[in-house]
Length: 346
Image 1: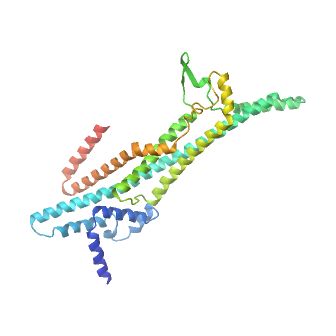
Image 2: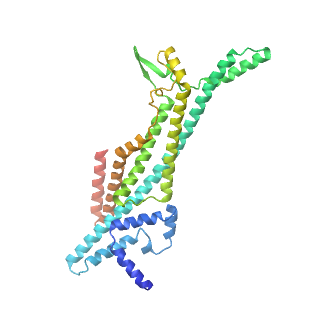
Image 3: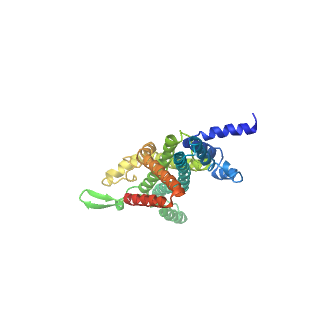
């Protein structure tokens, strides 16, 4: 079979493809390159009809022309209608792929920086807490140490002063952390670790929800084919890995603290009217982060909504693009309707 025959046969196959087939083809083309930059560079010098973003439109137009080849006005109207419908459907799916990539890339960059910052904060807090406790115990031992002469006493006092600078670093509950509201009731202020937990949980929900939303889009509209550029996907997975590592480190830290300090907490609580040196909420297990519950909740509560918004935006963009080709006023009217609907939902 000649090259010309092969090309004709390929064209015949391509003309029969549906908009969904073409969108899956586009997704596969995207995934065949290591990054977005490599994908764009691969087609920057090629013919315009071979560019993945353009080629499907030409094939779908030819499909409509082949379906309605007649010269009568009604044939032409049917051809135009089919051409618009096919290209609008493909444009929506193409826009969906590109907008999802753009949003995941942006969200990942921001969330990645936040996750790294939260991990650094946790490491600092853990080290400060451990050193503060060690300094306090060392000071208690130094206080009891009997010096042999004046020089030793001077060194002992100097050591106590140095240790005193670190002894106040303690994240356990104190009377100063709460305020009496009425007899037997106190209102408590969140500790630094409680705020850390709240921030990390909120960040994890956002990241996991967007990753789950991508899967919903892929399963519902692209037959499970991945649609993210490989570098965008790698960035998302790296952010997820950082968050998971932070949460695992934090939970392990709480477990270690419980094993080491439980007896001390129990004794302090008896002596200080219910105030223990545990971090507020720590003894009750309220600080532990259930990562599986976060994943399930993010998928159930947020992911479907995120995916639905992506789909609606892509369809609206496609409709405006097609309307604009034929009737600029109709496109403007449609954009105004979208703006009014969004304003009502604020």
